Image 1 (cartoon, rainbow, N blue to C red):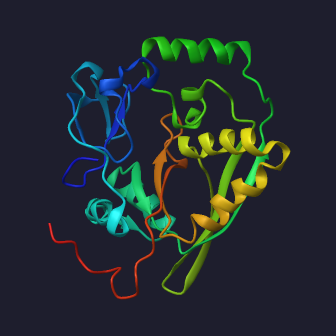
Image 2 (cartoon, rainbow, N blue to C red):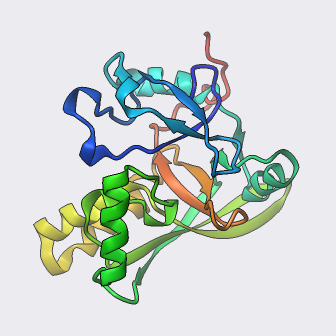
Length: 245
């Protein structure tokens, strides 16, 4: 996002090809030359010129109950029902948005059809890496590691708005979730589901869990959870206090 709270989608970002001095982290401000993407109609999509990246500061700290990060979140438009986000897409062309669900129902683990990349998929992965091209959000969490996740992960959740409860289900493509899977699989072997589900079904929902949602380039009416944002819950009465900018 930009400093005024405008969400942007930047690419290409071929992290395997970026030098350490330009390899930025989550929640870190950078400056770079960007221009509107020519082959992507989504209004937030921009091309980033890798050689112009300048990492200006350290990632925002989590101290004081995420004070610095909450100040940033406070600049964003937060949706409280997925239907509102979809309406904004149709009316305003929004393809990125922050959604705060009312509660989580559970996490679905679905084995993929093929746990290994096909030869065609391998060739595409290598081509994208070499070209520094944008991988579609459907590939997020897999391409950076060059390992195919053997499961798809979907959150089931509901939103309560105006006395109406709506249940939704969306795929998670946050690369951190993929990294969590490989880490717990390495440490726990066949028992990997225990710590994995503990993290995603209990620990994160105990926080003020929000979803950064994004649409798929090739299927503009399909949404994915592209990042999980989970500041600690604040005391009642403090949640709606404005941030002093």
